[in-house]
Image 1: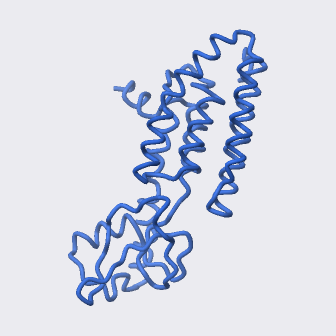
Image 2: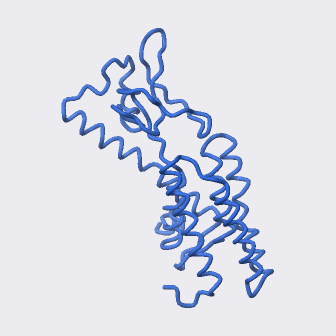
Image 3: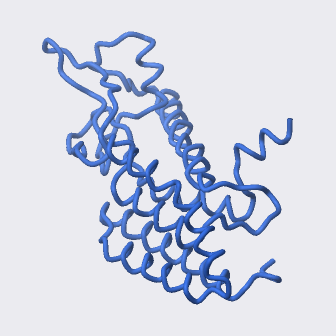
Length: 231
């Protein structure tokens, strides 16, 4: 599959997977990633540009790929994901710009859109978890004074955790009653929940989605583009 690829391209691919692997490991273990990782791999990206047999073409491709940078920074600013996720996308765009091993057309946003699609996976995981709890005759909404509609939504976005870890609370007290809170949680300003037996939504590191999205980009391409092309 790697036949025909230049040595620089192969190095870029290996470096990209190494960066994503390290970022995913540290984010899962500590929920934080040292900026040294991004600095190191961005420096490597710059070095690879000047080692390219066609420097100007390499600069042009990287420049186009970095169109994603302002988008990532805006999403970070509004708390859609954290600073590490934004830096990950930016460095990845410079390290492996528009890289794929198939004939599918991709854009600088392929990894981001693939990651966004994959980020809905927890909805189905939560649903399965809650259905199992209900089948076990557990009263998952015990003490919750809320409408049926909101309870249905809760079944998808969260679950009642006995010992939450790296999750955000979905509960709040209103007039002395427990209510469900579906307000957007700022990725860097919201504290993880430490209470027991409360409804939470899992705080899955977005770097994992970025990593999976990049793998799909490399092996398959842009999920949205390929689905649209089928029709």
